[in-house]
Image (tube, rainbow over all chains, first blue to last red; front, side, top):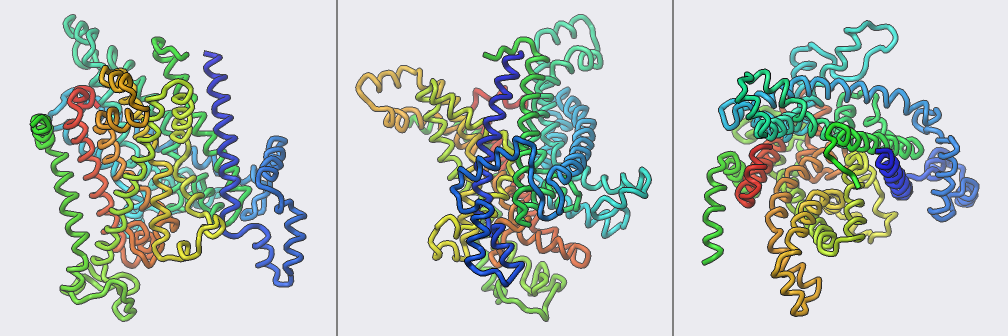
Length: 317
Length: 304
């Protein structure tokens, strides 16, 4: 178990390293490098000044050397300065990550509260009317474009009925619980609908698989009723693949959060990455992307560990 | 004769899958509608690209069946032309991704050993990445700095090619995994051994003996990825990084509509609804193909 953890951690580190190099290189290919920005801000700068500035900041060196220097700085705790927010990168990332985790956590929670019973309910009577209905809804959830759903929800709840705010977080200091909560409802609803389909289908599949096992038939033969069979005998085993899928979902969740946060102007990681890339804020974009990747890889690691822990039959070489 | 015998039950199973049939029919109807846009344009006597500020945001009428947008352009025609872009990106992107995935999967599965390990670790790594943020970085890259010829980077359709390349770069993983799995089971069969013993090289064995036997998972995964890619394209275009106006796409139409949500909410409805219908049709179709092409997986699949 320990060697598995170390192995996976080493792999995650390698992925992060490769990714940082690739993104670092790509950032250099985006329009508007720092010197261009300085020139556009100050018309008195000549071409010679630009050259000197480039040499001063080391931008005339080959990409690998620049990347190595960036890596050295980062590993020694210097994460750079955000141009857009005029603050150290770490100070910007912290609150954004918290906001995103709040959003993702609530939506995953709501989604599971609905999806688990729905999946079990569908699996108890496969190919019945209710199974088709639940399955159809799950398919719809998987196929719906999240950003369009967000627009439609804003159109209904904010524009038409004027019930909820269309975006933002409200005043963070001076407001009570409800004032905070109402800004959360529409984004959470969007993310929940977008992720619930997958959850339902996985829960249904896992439950069907387990209900076919011999020990369930034995339990039935001994006279256990459906309720006891599902809750006591089947559910625990059926949850194993669902837990794994949840942890593996981190990458997808971040993508969903990016769209949802952008539409609702929710100040989280997704919107941060989007703004940083579009606003030529290289330091921030790079660190935010790496943080998002790191969290995703951590989720995958947890999935592997949870799997091995929940199902002792699994053996990793 | 033999192929007929195989095709028959496959077709029957497919037709029995009512949702898949619905998906297939829906896609056909959509394709016909979308590609008949020039006919409709001629019949209504309109031009899609003409901007007419006097006819901004009109209600639906005999001439403009779904009304006009913020620049006085016909909404229906723009949706149909946008559909052409979305469908082309979805189909070509999925095909390109399938090509890459098939190559990776075949090589990994056939050669096995260290080659397999490296390729699959790489695939797992790509799967683990947060997709959308990375796509945004790629979409923001300045093509001129890549050293591509200006004739290409300045073309109006460059955003179309670029998005196809981008989705193909990340869309191949599912196909690669499935093809690798299927190849692993096929390569141990006697006929592969027979081919080897008469001196066939690895390329020939992969292309002639293995590929035809792993075609089912390729078709299934590709169909499912068409919907996924259309979604990705629309998200990127919505964020302003995919298909660039004036070329219409369902995603960038929604991007405009977002700003007009308070004054003209109906503009936001149609493009998104069409994305939704197209993607769900692709998913139904892929699900049905899975049952039809792979009867052995039927039990396992029905339980999903």
